Length: 157
Ligand SMILES: [Zn+2]
Image (cartoon, rainbow, N blue to C red; front, side, top):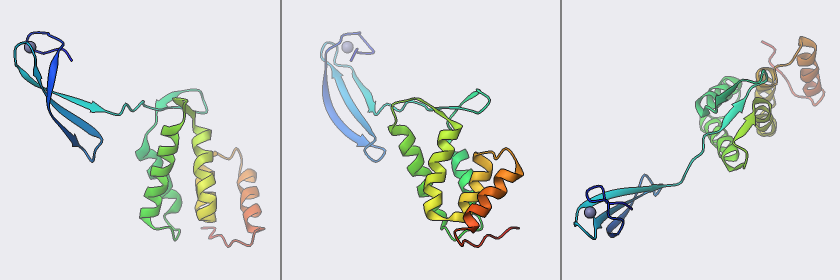
């Protein structure tokens, strides 16, 4: 690491400390040449994920927007708020693990639907109606009757 004072590249680490719940490593260094002390930080690189929307437009993945969508979908369901937040965090982590830095909005929607379907059928339909953007009311009703066929009571409010 280049010394900010004399530009020498040899330094000695005086102290290392983990910060931010061990997400950051801070090092105090001393330049071997001029003895200037300086600090460096080491973090895991996080590459932003880009969402490709249905119309081809790209935008940065917004975890808050995902959480908001899930909250709307589950507002009348018995799923506790903590579980909804965990679901959103889980999906975000899954996206971060992928090699691809781009994800389509459909892929995100399907990820959410997969999880929601196993947790709460009503929330699933609500979310599906938004994220899968049913092209017609018939599609939407088709999904509802498919679920109704599974003896699930739906509050059609
Ligand atoms: Zn120096």
